[in-house]
Length: 487
Image (cartoon, rainbow, N blue to C red):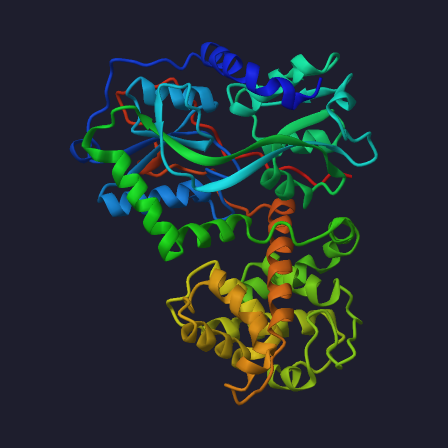
């Protein structure tokens, strides 16, 4: 019997069972209105996509950033309270300990909660290792072991699948385990199949190219936030108004692009080759990249990412246009920077770093981090004039010329005659600049995983520390353990 024949008949029953298992039940407790309390209290969990410590030692994540923006709109700070898993975060809302839960959640009408409009769509997959048997049909999963986080809609779906496929085993990891860590365990062969979403898979595959999708699950949903059924002060309306405005003004799109917009660009060969070069070629040049960071203030990992995109860290690299060396400098640029020998790794790296610093300084202060990095990278490819053309065209088309997500859609247009004729420079290969910048984003992310930023232990801000005197069934988790590239 196929899964589709039994899914609707048993899905509701399993969801109700999941409620009992996760102990999410309504409570007579009600949290004080966020205006009177003076803060918006959010129950969450440490998750690479939603809420985590970033490379600069500050909290970040797709949902984190949107909630901070929501707090500004509401006129109150946001206090994030991390819980060990989804079930406990939801329980905090029903028990009156938080105004809302935000932890990569998908709407579940069987829970005693109200759900906001969707933030982003997601679909689900089973992930395994390349070379292992893929599942083309439900019955191909017989004899396999699927790991899935407990207390989620995905877990309920896997229990349904288990009923229709004899021999399929479903297991649950420790409550605090992040999907990225589970994917690294999958890549290492310690997990047979992992039930996760496609974005988490794409993010992990950049570190573990042996990962592969084994099965597309028949479930699509959207990430949403959960509030009490009867939230005081019109909170649900405020949130949905904020989300509607964010969809209209580009905040949702730009935040999604910041975290997910570039992660599917590299293929299996690109990733595998890059990880090998990190091991066998990069170490000899790290001291030079670090020296360049001290001289320019630009993160050495970013400099290394640009250099890899340009030359694959080959000091003798030469293109058909005549650019050469680790940072692929032109003769004119090298002369302006005082680089006498473009094939000398140290001269090339220090010169390229100075050029990147000069390009970044030309950007207006309205272009914020990290968009400054990607615009600087594009300018490295097409020159500051080419980037100015892209920004001018963005304004002409009614787009935000300070946002990378808008420039991404404009850069390829620079080579089209109907737009190129507007500029003295004529056609510009903006598409190549876009590819370069997006590749550098991926390489930079991987280098941040491979060489974490050296910093003191993370200290939470007041807005992200559990309130004193309040009993919470929560665990304030340390930063997510960074996975190492799989062999």
